[in-house]
Image (tube, rainbow, N blue to C red):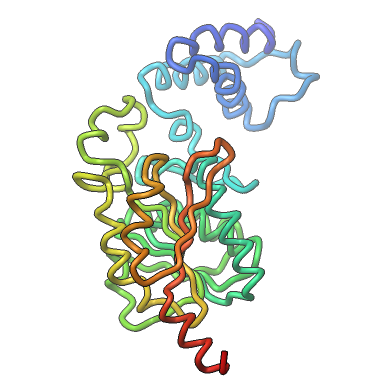
Amino acid sequence: MTLRELLRDTVKKLFPVSGESAPIEARELVSFVLGRRIGFSDGETGLSEEQTEALDALVERRLAHEPLQYIIGEWDLMGLTFCVTPDVLIPRQDTEKLCEEAEALIRERACRSLLDLCTGSGCIGIALAKRTGIETVLADISEAALAVAAENAKQHGVTARIVQSDLFSAFGGEKFDIITVNPPYIPSEAVDALDEEVRREPRLALDGGKDGLDIYRCLAVEYAAHLNENGVLLTEIGFDQGESVPELFAGNADVKVMNDDCGKPRVVIIEPRSKRAEADGESGC
């Protein structure tokens, strides 16, 4: 069987689970087995018997609803490839909106220090450090997730401080110019109703409590004390949290909601009003 025929056969096998993504997933699995990306000229070549057996085993794992990203052990965000394991949330394109908004603010304000909370694989903090050179701290409550983040930082040549912390618990009075966070924000009951393969991801990274807002409530209480003057917090939110999350911060902060490419609320940018007022007072404004 040629590679072209093998791809066609693999797409058919994957379709019941992967649907319209089956052609993409088939190419990813075949490329993984080959150890390189498939080129146009590969169409008439074939796989060895050993490679064919390896591909069959990978397809069976996918048909059992194991996420493709865990099977191949990596996925991309912001043009960078990150190691992913079942200990971390899979990077998603939605999160690129958070990275883009954070990068713009880092450059605009010449931010020098970044804290990436709920870092998981470290993809947000590492992407920002790689693209801007900002001094970065990657923090998560999960020791297993931090091991993945540390490996990703090493892989991308990023020097980042790795801290195990339940939100701000390990940081005392330490402050940063910018804080990013992609927290668990799915209501607990909704987690149980998610697709089987999404439920393969760590519940700790998905479950946001009864109404999905537990982490945001904690952030609203603590975040301002960990921002430098002119500092800013950016957090990802669920598509239906464009009003509920901003309300938690609006009392003493300027809050802006940014939509993703589909027009759905995706990122909330929060700047403590008291910090800006203090800066204006010192400058005589």
